[in-house]
Each structure stands twice: as C-alpha cells, then as structure tokens.
Length: 327
Image 1 (cartoon, one colour):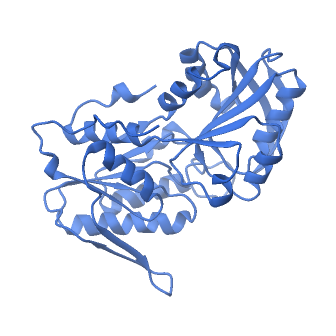
Image 2 (cartoon, rainbow, N blue to C red; image 1 turned 120 degrees about the horizontal axis):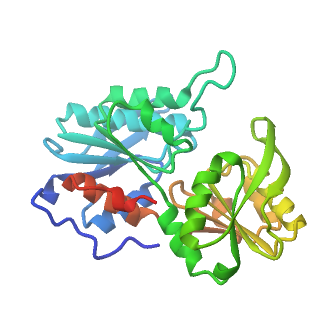
C-alpha cells in the first residue's frame, strides 16, 4: 500500500517546524512516511565504532522543531534501542521543541509482566529509558499488549495495522468464504474486531504453551470445515505455532489457511517453516524490514503502513485527533 500522494500538511502550524528522522532499523519505511507527508527525511549520522559503541550526530538545525524519530527496535534490538535513545538525547540537547519516538515495532513488548520468580518487566524498562532520554511522546503500532501504554508517563498513541489488512482481505478472492481465526485466547479481541469489519465468523485455537517458543495445539473452537481460514496475530516469531495451527485447521476440514501479522520478527528457521508448510500465504506490514530469505519467499507478502503512520504524524503535529485511525 503506497503512501497517499494527496497527503500534505495544511495547517496553521507550519510544516517547516516538522522534522522526521530515522535510525538504521527501517529507513525505507521512514522515507515512505516522508513521501506521504511531503517533507524531506532529516539528516542524521548514526554509525558504530569498531568497539561497538554507537555515535550519533543530527546534521541540521532542529531548535524549536516538532521532531519524529522513526525506529523499529527489531533485531538487533539492543543496538536499535540504543540508537534511538542517543538520537533522542541529541535532539533534546539541540533544543528540539517536542520529540516523538515512532516505534513501528516495540522490542521487548512480550516481556510485559512478571510471570515467574525473579524476572524483569523488560517492556517497562524500555519505556523508562525512552522517557529518561527525553521523549515527549510515543507513537507505536500493534503493541503485543495494550497495557504497555500504562508503562509510560507521557502520551502514547497506539495504532493498529488492521485498516491496511482489512482493505487487502476485503478485496481478496476468498472474501465471501473467510473465517477469521485467533491463534490463542489472548488474541480474541484483535481477531473479533477484524472479523466484524470483514463480516466473517470467528474461530479460536486453544493451545497450551509449556515453554517459550514451543506451543502445542489442543483443539479448535468454531466450525472451519470448507472455509478459507485467516489467522490473525500481532507478530510471527519462530512460526512454530503458526505451522501447527495451520495443520490443525486443515485437519479440521479447512479449505485453505492464510495468516496475517503486523510484525515479521521471523527468527531462527521461521522462513523455512513457512515455505515448507501448507500455508497459502502470510501477509505482514513493513513495520520490520524483511531479511533477504523472507523477501525471497513466495509465500510472504508485505503491505505498507507508511500511509497510516504518516496520517498519525500529521494529526499529532497539527494537534488534532488520531481516533479516526483506530480500529
């Protein structure tokens, strides 16, 4: 989905005061956002010394500007988080008026609670670091858990890629025979919202996870026989759960299985698992750039959220409501 060419900032608040910068994690998405806004991507040098230390320099005047820093904290997540923190600090010291951290993918979001003894709440640690570095606002996309917004004492705009996904699947050949499937109980709310807008029924996969990245599919709640199944998730990591869910659905009589997720984490052997599976297609947003083997995989399709993020940035800059972008 290309960024809309008609999107331009037209407001009493001058677009000359709007700056969009990016780190090294997803420059293509940042450029697409800027194309949608009709602004140039701001100049910044972000490089790594031979000993691994990161060095940042903002190459233009940002004094009094409304600055948006686009940075997905995907793998290598620690490096990209550090780049973002140092860019925010540099902007703060350069007297930027307001700094918004735009995180299409929020790393460490799955570590959002203390689920066993003596473990950190890492998502909260990342939130605290962003605030301490000097971020005035956060714009995120499909957080793993919506309550992560509460880890911040600054405003958080939490967007969803669902409008982009819904538009794609509404025009698909299988639209009339779709059934939306939640891969677990935790994703029911997300799947139900999309099913409602696609005017499709809902099914739920009951699974039991005994250890991280290992899931056992138990049974399916709902009638999927003869239907084209659409599995909805926020991210796909190792794809182990996805492949097992696909097999369970097909064994229950599903005609086909397609999946969509906002974030293409795709660690380990995920791409090979998808390629070798009976999945028809997996649709992602470009919140995380695809690694080369994923980009070459014929079963993986990418939809752009640049237009969605550009409209959100426009609304934040103009200080108007972003609620129309929510699903």
